[in-house]
Structure formats: structure tokens, C-alpha cells
Length: 133
Image 1 (cartoon, rainbow, N blue to C red):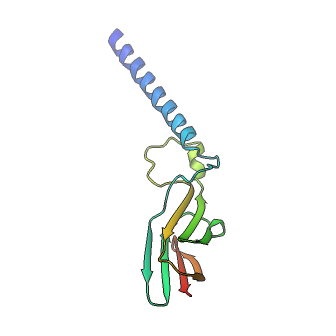
Image 2 (tube, rainbow, N blue to C red):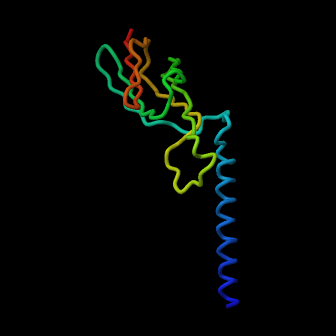
């Protein structure tokens, strides 16, 4: 009988340790707080014709108004933030594969001048059309 209580006690300690580890992981990754540095990069596709470049980024869960697009000297810089779901504050994490937090994606483009002629977000993807000048 004593060994059963010892096993239950060990399992209880193990579960408490796992819950504490989950809390520490949430604090480490900064959920709920704004990170100064980007935490992740979304995947991107780039297509080119003689007159334009089309860039597509997978951004599910990102608010369109939060996305910034800058044309830099050597390419394109796209940034925003995907907020964590509110459930993270109250539920235990069983698996966390979708990145949350601030992101920034820098994409190199061929040397030249570009102008954004279309910017749209649909079905979780940002599509940019850049005219070559």
C-alpha cells in the first residue's frame, strides 16, 4: 500500500514540474509581451516577369492593418505581429507549432527601382505586386 502512495506522489510531482515548465516556456517566448526582435519569418514565394515582381507571404492570423512593407536599397522588408490566441493565457500547451509574435521578413530583389502597385491579403496570404521602373 505504501508503494502505491509513493507512485501517486511521484506522478503528482512530475505533473507539477511539467506545468511549471510550460509556464516558464510561455514567459521565455514572451507571449503577451512585445518582443524587440523578430521571433519568426513567414515563408515567401517570389515570381518575376519583365515588368513586375509578385511576392506572396503566408500570414494566417495576421491583421492586414498591422503589416508594414518597405522597399529598401537591396530588397523588401515586411513586418507585423501575429498575436497569440487568448487561450494561451488559461490553457496548457500540448503542442505549439504555429509561430506567434513579431516577425520580419527581408527579401532580396535584383538591383533596381520598384513601386508597390498592388497590396492585398486574402486567404491568409499577403500578395504584393511591384512594378519595375
